[in-house]
Length: 77
Length: 229
Image (cartoon, rainbow over all chains, first blue to last red; front, top):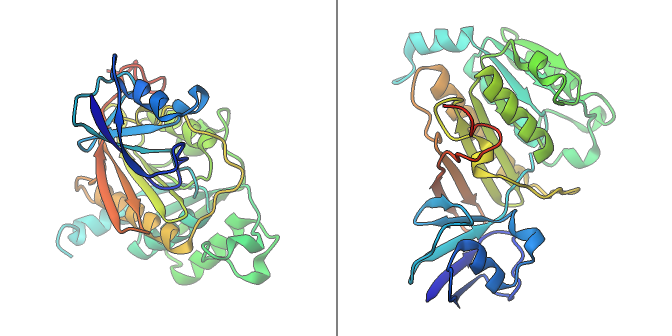
């Protein structure tokens, strides 16, 4: 299954690119996707995932062809 | 002005708002709300003016460095509109003092610079059932969300966890952008209009001129509002 990923803003890009297509297999959840991308487990909880204009939880199942946007919380003021 | 009128102006005159944090967001927000004619603004911040603040905290001048932010902000705001009552609280918000600080206001504006206090503010707003208008920025990136307790998702529904950051670079223009949106949302709420960012969070990247309103759902497992109806 293929999922297109876009990494926004100042977020860490473990594979060095801001946009790419990821192949994932069983249990294609957001969490699985993030692990496949190389994010460390202790950092994953901070990541915000968006699909079709909606925030989705890390347990959400993804579908073939989905585009997922990733970002991190911003707290400056 | 359509959508506000005399009734709206009277509502603005009668309202008491609290601004948590008088930094990059809080300075511009306070100027916007003062100019709009709100009745009372409570400024909460325990900080002193630093030289590095002056790129974005436009109520302060170089001769203010080392002085309490709330007092200088009060002085400058009063110079531009003496009919607004400015109350200052020079304290760091924590879970023990938050209820007392915010119990007397009608709307809370989140202009803080860290998530530890933002989460306390979110829980306080829910507990006191006060609308909370959240703004945040980093570099060219901006966030905005309006929370109406018991009716809309809260900040923690959108941001469950947040890393601690010691230094957050902020461009003055980004802070002004976010603060202006917070003011617009607050004025809409006060004047009886629907705010645009309830149940949604604005994700804006001014380096690419990308602006997206992202839908946020109430999280039944949210430890701030999940147990509420």
